[in-house]
Length: 120
Image 1 (cartoon, rainbow, N blue to C red):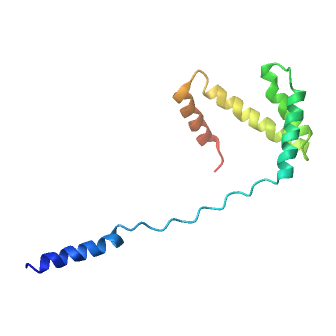
Image 2 (cartoon, rainbow, N blue to C red):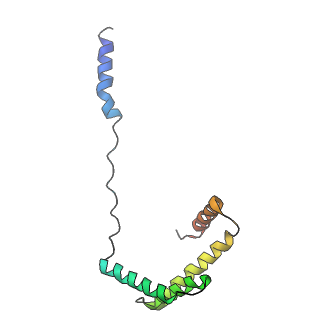
Image 3 (cartoon, helix red, strand yellow):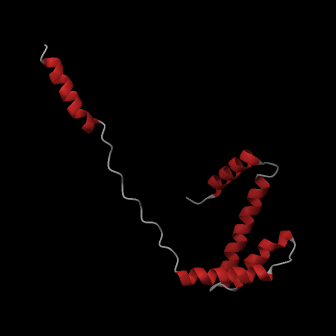
């Protein structure tokens, strides 16, 4: 019995690294390729042009003006307008659903609204 205890301790100590070893980490998924610097610069210029065109508009009209100006410069203005109007409708419905809420309650309402309305 006196020989058995040290032998058991040595076996447990020797097996512990394999028992507590962590699984190898998975390779991170490849991130979406970064946008072409030329495209990024063209977008920045288009946004700046739209911002200047919408300067001085009342606060409630700026978003609509920016959408119109950006879509006018896009490769497919009709599709851009349709997407923009659909997003504006979703945003208005969400604002109506979460009206009167603030702080964490508002964040929770927005999360809940988005989880119900997102396509799966």
